[in-house]
Amino acid sequence: MRRGKTNYTYSIIGVAIVLFMLGFMGWFFVIVVKQGGNALKENVQVDAYLMSPNKDSIKALQTFITQQPYAKNVVYTDKEKARQNWLKDGNEDWQKILPGDNPLPESIDFTLKAEYVNNDSLTKITHNITSLFPGVVSDVQYKKSAITTINQQADRFGLICLVIAIILSIIVIISIDNTIRLAMFSNRFLIKTMQMVGATRGFIARPMDVRALVNGLISAAIAIVLLFVFIQWAENTVPELNSIHNTQVLALLFAGMAVVGVTISLFSTHRSVIKYLKMSLDDLY
Image (cartoon, rainbow, N blue to C red; front, side, top):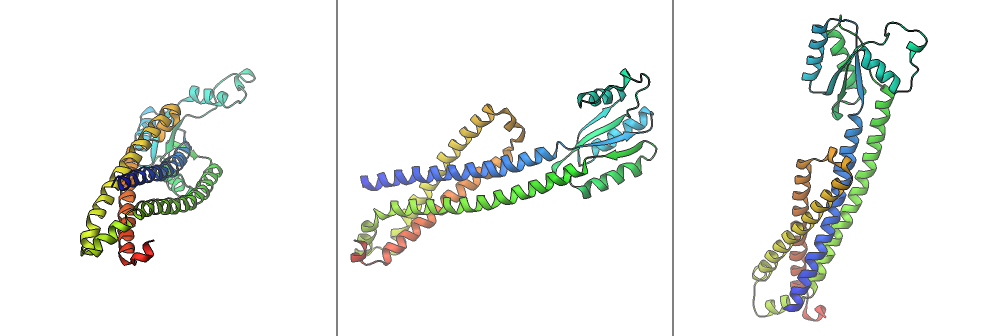
């Protein structure tokens, strides 16, 4: 019995470590890679250049864009701020050579939510703004080549990460299965003895399935706590990670770890019990 408890302890620790690895992969690929890609997309700026000095029209345009589902960080850039941005980009100050009026136009600048950062959506957005505010907006500009490059690189990198995640997930599931089977190996004679004294298959399997269910939950709980502590440490160490923190996605990730831990533990345990019940006593040696 002590040997059996020891094996269960080793099994719980082993499964917890493997589940932690699975959770780490999920956090890295799903949150860091995807959310990081979204954060990169949401840095793309769209500039709606103004031709009308009418403050009411400009305010109406800014309010309209702010209310749209695609808009983020909508700001009004006047001529002086446009000049400051021009100089910040390393351009020459024309006022040193040709002092006079500021030739830079005013604009409403905004960034987009990640799902709208593609040329098709931006074409519709541009048409919508210019058609609704014909006397206010002279042009809507954005870096088309940068958007195409970002989407291509994001799709390529996402596909590579998906393939890697699938391969690693298969390895993790096999590792959990082998860990459970090794733990059940020490109970093979107990299982066979119970069968030889007349216990039914259900009577033998039921308590071991319950034990597997409990062990799976314990392993998942340990792995979730370890991953949560690691994520907190990572976000405190690298403050940039806080910008891509997503509580809902983390909750789904933790729930997935619990489901995988319990399902694989229960499946592997029950399969091992059935296997040893079907084996002859000589084969157990």
